Length: 243
Length: 243
Image 1 (cartoon, rainbow over the protein chains, first blue to last red):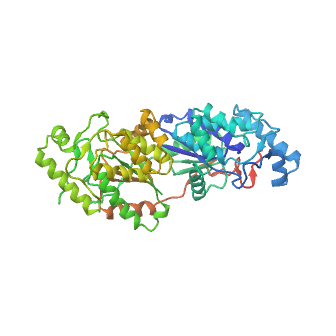
Image 2 (image 1 turned 30 degrees about the horizontal axis):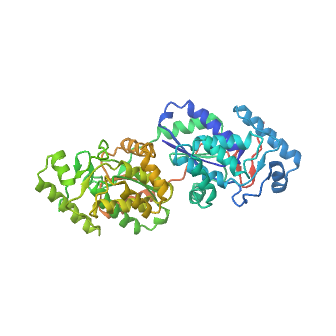
Image 3 (image 1 turned 90 degrees about the vertical axis):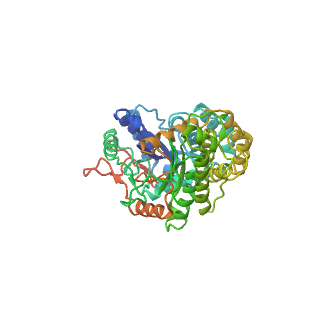
């Protein structure tokens, strides 16, 4: 069974939702059969790499909140994060482009380090004092801490095309699946869960999707439309063509 | 829509089946919505890298064929390949381990070069005079021709663990899906096509799978069990938690 999770490093609900999903997954009896794949979604895809600003400033400028409203929102999010055991720095956090982080997450995926890097990026963005947006050396440090080879990380950061198509493809797919916000969870391409739902909801979705796994339906050239198994190679060799 | 194809470079029916599938895909009206992913399957997973022998010898020793039977089989396969416009060398071809080639195909996948490398490996194995099994320099040459960076290719060949887990994971998944031979085609994890079926069968499978794409079913915490869309971030900012 496969769970795909679209998220953005700059998305507080993604940080919280990941913890809630993982709580459900830890208690799911068939967790060993669940493969989790993280997919890219940028909340602010047009933003330039050097366009970094404090979150509170961004919220007041972009959404017209008062500073007090923006700060109350951060305090609330901090409380939600704390309830999941997550650190959250409610003041002084930055907002910026996450494109390079998504590109690195695709590199990490190829080396089985995606989950680890995503956790480190979330923590760096939401809990640590240092901004994660305008500092490639910090990204190198985090990616190396996640187990990636430094040289490969630097090569990806130096080439803006590296894994760019993969990020865009994830984003196109999110749109095709009807996601207009994140986090967005897709189970076996059958069930969708939108938002940082309570762990019970994820538990229900896991159980439903698991219960409805269906065997593949064969399509073939045999009389009944099924696959006749001809013209294949297996442990006993290759079928010899009948002509 | 996603089509996964399990195959082995040493599998003549995979070489032929890929061409038949592609014929159907070229004529499929929604081909732009089809993503093709190649997955690993070794017909001879236990074979050592330096254990290379002529195909005809392998067929007589392993399956107890007479040389004449083995040669007739190769002639038949060559005719099937020719019917799809593929070159096929019916005498003097080798058999050996394809593990390193599968590892390179996983590297190539990360760089969008999987399809190109697979085509080059098939042609090298089935059409060219030189054996592709015991010659890492040849694999480097082919991978570079497919567009991969030489350094990365050499690093993968030098480290037997690189992408090994990905190869094994593909093979486990094939077993879980009920494949005991290749080529094995899986459409949206719903329909399965086993073997190098005629292009009409692939056309039918594509149309069936496409026609039955279903929208995601939402799971959520709203009263009707649907997703209420709360606790998410989108283009208009992040929902503010209600506590």
